[in-house]
Amino acid sequence: MIVEKLTLKQFRNYERISVDFKEGINIILGQNGAGKTNLAEAIYYLSFARSFRTLNYRDLIMKDKDFASIEALVRIDDETKQIKMVLTEEGQKITCNKVEINKLSALADLINVIVFEPKDVGIFQASPRQRRSFLNMQLSKLSSKYLDACSNCARLTKERNAILKSTNPNKVHLEVVTKQLIEESYEVCLRRKEFITTLEPLINKTLSAISLINRKVTLKYNSYVEFDSKEDYIVKAQKAFKDTLENDLKYKVTTIGVHHEDFSTYLNGAIISNFGSQGEKRIVAIALKIAPYFLVEDRTKRPIVVLDDVLSELDQTHQNKMISFLEKFAQVFITGTHINENYKVTIYDVANQNILRRNTHGR
Image 1: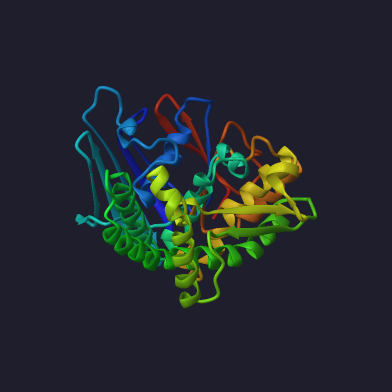
Image 2: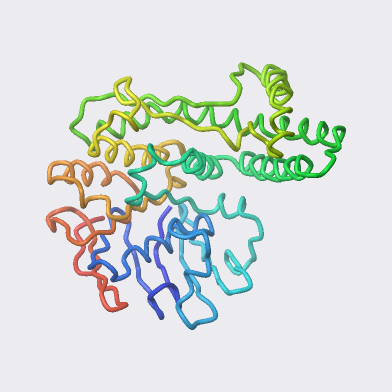
């Protein structure tokens, strides 16, 4: 999976820019504020129709303009597809080869991007919502069934909360919605549990490749019920909702469920959020974000990797290990202010809304 060409119009600080990218490692260099992260953001947007920097896509439209567009030629195996996104105040339109895409699940099947950004270092101290977001983003790319189940759970939880907030909650209606919610949430819990189990050895493999620390990462999925089968899950979930019904009615909100779940990360048996150094948290966070790359068995469909300012806090030894590791990937984008020019990479300089490919040492 390769982004061959990216064209932006009235996107962030770019009036109009078009750039051809290479396979292998693409280094995007520029001073702070030059717009290098805007390029990374646009590439990520192709995969999720959302930004990793803002929840409001209108922020992406250049000031005093009425639209922005992202257009890309993406090669998957031997086929090149044209993806175009037009953002306006009224909404956004997404097309692939000029055919409109209306479901995010269809976009999820089309292009896959994983990203690391500086704030990800704080994922271990962040709220459970951010870790759930990580799970949801990764799993939605692996399973359209998971994405649909998540959407249904969110809809049913909203409906259940509306019943709880009513003056006289209809107990029969509440029971029906709760039953539906439990049925839908099984797929979410199961996929998350499997994902965490599968991801753990991949994180350790990645950590070993990019770091000098000889330590083991352990992940623990914190589900609201422990289960061994679907039947077991249904029985235990029903009991859990029954046990919390009084509190739900009192506080007028659903107090348990997949929307409250979390996972914990341990480094050599100690929870990293409490006992890990800043350097350890950074390198483990990088490994956590990169590891899902290896979950995609079809090499032609493995994700495009976007790493925003990933090298700035790494010493030269760790930078060397990181670049050496990433050379095996199909396509990587790294933003930064400087780079060792002896690396086998393609370098792009960003300044004054222009992009200049300086030299090519890569594939």
